[in-house]
Amino acid sequence: MISINVYPLPSYAQDEDLTDSVAVVIDVLRATTVIVSAFAGGVKDVIPVLDIEQARQQKELLEKKYGKGSVLLGGERKGIPIAGFDLGNSPQHFTSEKIADKILILTTTNGTVALHAAKKARNLYVAGLVNAQAVVERLKNENKIAIFCAGTDGEITEEDLLLAGCLVSRLSRNFRQDQCQNQYQNQCRNQCRNQCQWNHHAETAKQLWENRFFIDNNESVSESGLIEFLYQSRGGKNLIMLGLEADIAVAAKIDSIDLVPEIHL
Ligand code: MLT
Image (cartoon, rainbow, N blue to C red; front, side, top):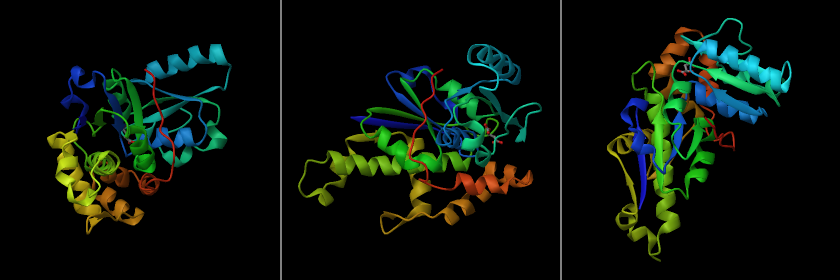
């Protein structure tokens, strides 16, 4: 039996939910999109930390070990870059020119907090829309999956739930196809569904995705459709208020990056 549980906020999960589980952390706008982009740009490692002072101290320590210029600080508070940091939290700024072979210390309002909340998992993976399919491929053979949505300041955000729904929807289809022993596969959807269990929040998230991006039982998703959705979401509205619409368009580039960052905390 495979179990997939979605937690719309990190506070919805108990420690035991992570026992023998892999965790996937989602903060579409923008922390996890930034981490995926940083790895795509060749970053050596990303270290999420909870506060600004801790980030500065860690940089000092690591530069003693690896040399000056080997470590960059990135992140935001209230969506705005942090004074004295090398980078803010706009994914398109994490280019290979800036971050290849560097260690990135990242501190953000919600995303890095969610990563810490999930650190007891056996493996801790990072998901954005940008690497959704790569995450699905990575999770295909796992038995217990906890999907943590970061939310915004303690409130559930639609954009995180949407990606959680995308993962559940794609995974549930994978399980049906890969694990069904019945030669008449299309006649045994219910039987195969029984091999994979998901919680109520996972079902809600899955419906959010499928109601929006399914036509005739098939996924039909476009970047423009995602941008439209993200513009209406809590995180999207915050970014629009800050004049950061460009970040939304980058976050909406679904399946454009074929890697899954793993974080070690
Ligand atoms: C977060 O961690 O909450 C996000 O990074 C917020 C943002 O990007 O502004």
